[in-house]
Amino acid sequence: MVDRNNQLKTTTGTAGYMAPEVAAGGNYNAFQADIFSLGSVLFMLATRMPVTEGDCTAKDSVFKYMMDGRVDKFWKNREKIAQRYQVDLNMS
View 1: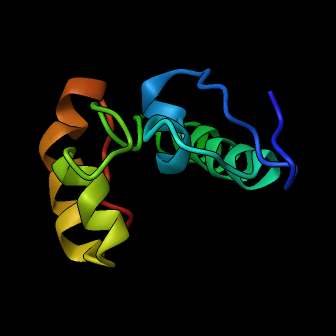
View 2 (view 1 turned 180 degrees about the vertical axis):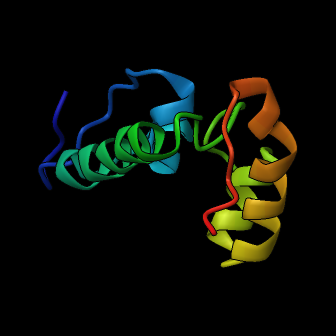
């Protein structure tokens, strides 16, 4: 459902790929939310592991690292789970 400002209100999608504003349940710009989801899919294609194993909300520590710009902590966490996904993050 779209409101007066062309903002969607419905919440659909898979938690690990869902933009935070969609997961929060408020109004959101569908185009921007789709770009976030596309980025999540591209990340998975490039690394063979998900962006996060939780949902894309502030409660998820990995997602919070992304939102806070803590790339170091984000990749440290991805290194921890890489073996589970049979991924070698050593790019040297």
